[in-house]
Each structure stands twice: as structure tokens, then as C-alpha cells.
Length: 231
Picture (cartoon, helix red, strand yellow):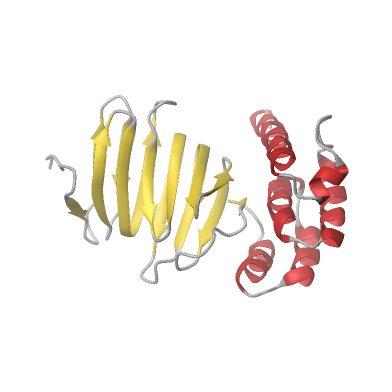
């Protein structure tokens, strides 16, 4: 079946149905089973929905127009590529970047999520530490302990000991929330796999300098993509 949905209208799918909303020159929104969304805007360069429950996949075919998904206390911005966002009955959200990149806006702060990375958001709280989509269960468990169960330094130690080369963006994301002593350990662990670029210093990272963290993030992201493309 085909039809249209206008701004301000809701779309509800049941357990046996899916839907796809086509947005000219931008891409599409795939609505999974048992999902409720509200279409807030559907214009060139300004496409926004609210995800009440269920799961949607944004397929953005243009680098210019943005797709925005409003969740409880935050928004997910897909600038290019493909991202899947799901919300359960407790308002816990999971953001998975299939390819491209995604930005999460929370309390006027931006959190970037790389290709093949996942972020959990519990009941509208601050976005959790990103992790690889194929991360070991033990690593994911320690990340959730660190994020939501006050795991502290013990969780950081366990995360470091479990992390693979492909998990270094996870370690980098932890630095601003770690003690200075643990930042030193995190810096050295990441450096063993991805030495920082010339304009990123050890002291800057220990001080959690936002610009340096972003520059190192971009460097590691590009190297991980190169490694993935040449497997």
C-alpha cells in the first residue's frame, strides 16, 4: 500500500507491518514493526521526526540535507549515510551507525558517533560511551557499568584490558570523564595503536582539551576506515 503523511501527523505500524517514507532528493525513513513516529518537518534540508517507540532506519543519500530524530531529552542528527535508532517501552534508546556518521545533541553538547559504532541512552540521560557494533559482550558490560552504575576506575581498567585496536574510539570517548591518572593510562593505550597527530599533545589530552580530542578522533576514525576498507 502507498500513501502520504503530512507534517504533524503520526504513523503507527503494528507487529506485522513496516513502512518506508520517501523524501525527495534526501533519502528515506524505514519504519519497523510496532513503531510510532510523528513527522515534524519534511522539507529540503530540514527533515525531522519524533520517535515515540519502536525502530527506524534513516537512509540519507545527500550530504547537505540533515535528518533529525527527536528522542527524550536529545536529538540524533544523521548528516550522511545510514543510522538505525530504536526506543523501548522504558524510553531507553540505542543508536547504531551502519555507515557514515551521526551527531547526538544533548543539553547543547554534541556527541559524535562513527561508522559501525553504537551508543545507548538510558531513559533520556546523557548519551553513553560509544562502542563498536561487534564489541565483545564483556566490554559492553563494563561500559554500561562505567556509564550507569558508577563503575569508576575499576571499570576503566577492565575496559582498557578488554579493548581491541578497533575499540580505541571508545577509550578516547572515556577520557573527559576519567580522572587525570586514568587519562594518562588511556592516552598511552591509545597511542600504542594510533599515535596522536602532531598538533595533539599528551598534556592537552590529559587536560581533556576538546579541540585536541576531536582532532585525534578524526585521525583515528580515518585510520580505522582505511583498515576496514583494505581487509
